[in-house]
Length: 226
Length: 252
Image (cartoon, rainbow over all chains, first blue to last red; front, top):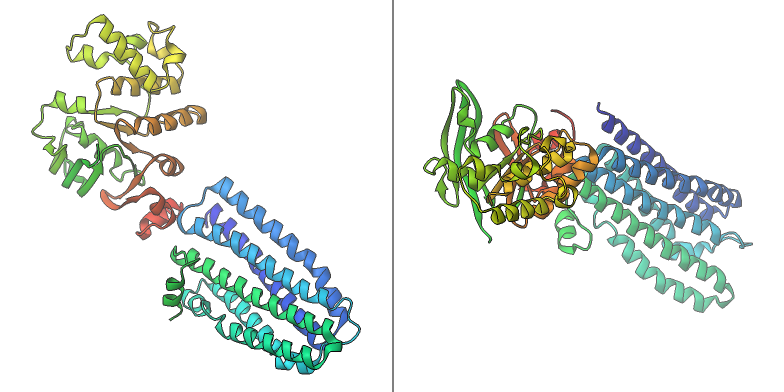
């Protein structure tokens, strides 16, 4: 293995570690919302600093590889992809943290009825599942699996669209719970962004593996997700 | 002027029994910089030596196929005319040791028996040295020996000597491999400037250099031209696995 290959393997290992941490943060935020568990909230908030530390470390590692090894071709694409994946993972970590912050000043749990009608748990499940799939694809450089992730935000979009109507309905029926209702809406919006970031990650992985740029290319995404 | 300036057709070259170039077909455009890359022994230097017919100077060297410059076969052209059209600069700076800087620049004229008036000679010297960004550094020492200059300056002097005859094509065989980073940067800047007036074919082992200065890159492997593409494309997304393995340092 060349020195550059070693550095790339180490960068990949750090990225995988960060990925696991972000998956764990998102899973914990799901548990915190469902069980209204403040100890989990605290744990997420502590771990957020670790996510930030990983982001800085991976940024630095990418800079060093570019400056010292001048990678080209697939190596350059990998480093460029990791730079962007790193950013997207950090953002997902931020959303998990943001969800946990919503629980900080709440004295009572979210309404089960509202969570169910808005399919919040399903949104969390889809997000976590996709994040795990992208991780598996990244670790194994699996083009086929990555391609199946592109365009998988559609069910999420549908749930999101329906949820807004459910929220409006709930707000009208229970005007006294406006704060909790708005926080539920905030969770939905954050999960929608999480899915967008997962899509970005999958696009970066396609760039790494196939040198194909899918950003702003609706036709290309459609083709690839077929 | 746009368009193809140099074309090779199924071009092969041998040293005795050993075939060092195999059926090379390539088209090079006017005013572009083409980098020629590949592992040692792949035929890069032989390729550019064939372009100005220096390959044939070696005993037992033979060629097959054709090379055309401005649509004329180099094998039907007068050798002096050909070498005026195609200048060459080598790996190690080689100013003529007995000549002054001034004489080195006009050496092509002196050695070919082309007589110029003093004012014309002065003009050629000044113009050539200015083109290689050496004029300001040597204008007060024009009658000192070229060998007194630093390595980087000597190499620029050699380039000035090559362009003094107004060639159309410049062949550069690893022109910076013996130079420090500052001199290398100056030569690279110079290549960027010279591109406006000349077509440049440069053999280089330095991939970052190829990336920085060339428009297109040719990758040679075991005497074959495996890939010839826009430099950016070749460095981001090489089509041939061997190109990728070579440029990423996995072999070679």
